[in-house]
Length: 89
Image: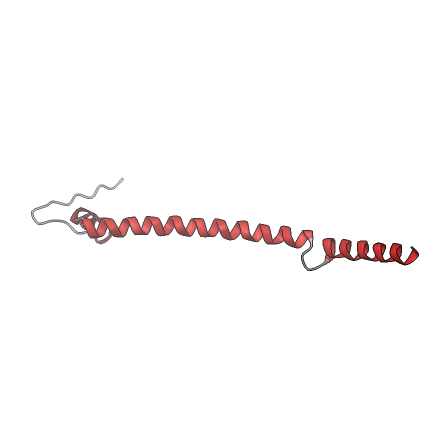
C-alpha cells in the first residue's frame, strides 16, 4: 500500500509540473493563443486589403471611367478642349 501511495504522489507531482512548467504548460498555451489572435487579426487585415485591391482591379477592367479618373487624379491629365482651373487657398 505504501508503494502505491508513493507512486500516486509521484504521478501527481509529475503531472502538476507538466501542467504549470512543462512543454504544454498553461502559460505557454496562453502565449500561443495570444500569438494566434494576433496572426488572425493580421490575416483579416490582409484579406480586407486584398478584397479592396481585387475590387479596384475589376473596376479598371470593366470601365473607362475609372481609368480616366485615375489619369486625372494621379497624372494630372485633362481632356482636349478642357480648361484646367487650380484653386489655391
